Image (cartoon, rainbow, N blue to C red; front, side, top):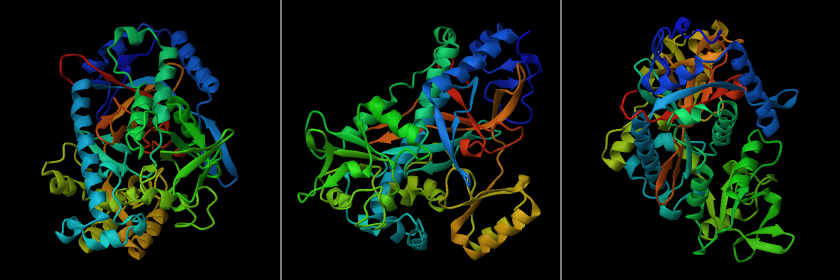
Length: 486
């Protein structure tokens, strides 16, 4: 006996693999046909193989708890998410468009602020932004690009359309898990990669290195690129070490770097000091340089901002890029695209209510049981209210928070997030909600991953996909059927 696909009911939501009961979508047909040949034992052995591979490869993530930090094995489902290449090509074009406009927006904010003067974005939105850095005013990074690496969260609503849920422009994480998901799948079901035309993802580290190398202030054949990590206790340390190793770059902590009187950054090595050209920093702005930001920070490098402003080292992402990583700014991205590019957005935003607006705030307060409320600058699924799953006390608490600081909150409708078949028992499959985080690179040119990190809510009916909140993950397949269907 194998998976009983004829009993799988996608329900009222858009399902990534099935258009109706027993009817797989064209990009998923070959996968479903292949899986139908599996016995119970085949499925179970593949699940065990995946779990063993995760342990063997050391794929883990850290959860912060009151009792301390806990390292957990990466939660993974062996049934992939499948998207047609035709659909993905359109989506990738929209992601490039979005990041290009956001970089123009950031550059404008640190120079002439034309978009504020023209009334497209309210001036107070910038003045009350916790991620605007006055220390960056007047500086022009190479190519005018501030956010070189972006992780954009996409969701698919009941209409099958992709929507942008949020932009992550500070220190976006998760790409290592996208790459490891593919490695796991190639070990677990290697045969299917011979039968299905699945776009590769393994070239991301090369594209990342090339993007970083383009930022080098020195015109040399092999710029020195380093990955700056807060250290082993950071929740994303696995990824920092993974990307450094895959790029052939040094993984460093703040204490490994020094800024000398020539305002250049040097790395301490056993052979002496070596000049650094590009720093892929995985440290938040406020800890980068104790001379400029938090004076007690031991994670950063004294003088780093001086070296950066002198044009002697490149920082990716640039300090201050997080000004566009604000969920209030997010609401204006369609206007930002139109303003800078004179184009309509290729990927729409989710409808968003701005709580600083009196009328919209009253609507939010009257409908807290139906909406998702988010703080403007939190990440990882923290600080949210999911109205339909909330208690009366939680809604009352959020009502007071919104009233006390309306600028800090936005609200969105509870989306009918798409689902995909997920193994929940020995051979039982049920639909689970998911999202997608593709990664976009920009320097001289742009690059978008073929697919991204699919995160899946492992609890029935849950809309929370973050691993820190109990979510899991799937491999994401971009499949070229040649027929141009979804």
